Length: 96
Image (tube, rainbow, N blue to C red):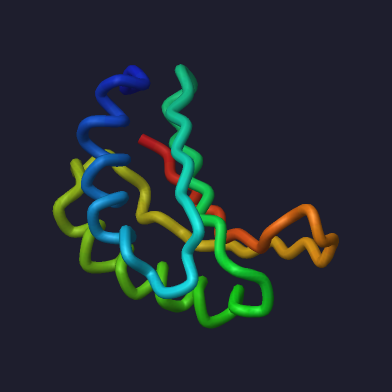
């Protein structure tokens, strides 16, 4: 199982480069755990989650080709919060 630093360098950084610039994205957060899992949260402006998730997925697929062979193909899931203090986000769950 890969260490968090290795995951950050070989998985997180390349995917962040691919995903950066998605329309209506406010910010992105990545956390690599000692269990080999990378969790990326891409926070999008409200009411754009479906389109944003599609845009993120369209950037993840080409970027996944360059990832180490041990990486499970990234999947995009969405979660929405309509409370004013929260934003919509797309979660990119990956495992190395």
